Length: 102
Image 1 (cartoon, rainbow, N blue to C red):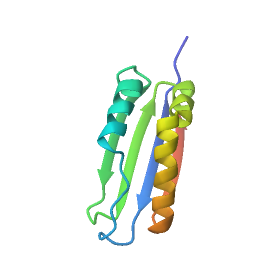
Image 2 (spheres, rainbow, N blue to C red):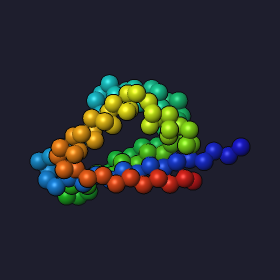
Image 3 (cartoon, rainbow, N blue to C red):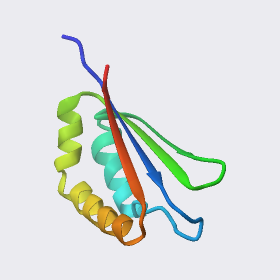
Image 4 (tube, rainbow, N blue to C red):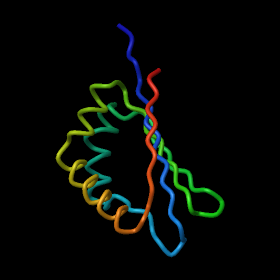
């Protein structure tokens, strides 16, 4: 049986470097690491910041669609995502999502 990985790319744009991008807390990062990275559900992550520091690109590769959905529906991740969406809306940060199945 072959595993079909899922690559999720999120691009976020701010209008001023006075605005910060929303990030996970150290506890949330540790939770993500323990429950998704170390268990092999997240295979790869990378963050790139544009030269002008106004665009951030986050790339995550999941083992498969099941792992992506588990991550998406996880209560800790959901809480973070809700807070991030509220922050982004309040600070006029736009987002674009791209999914690729390999």
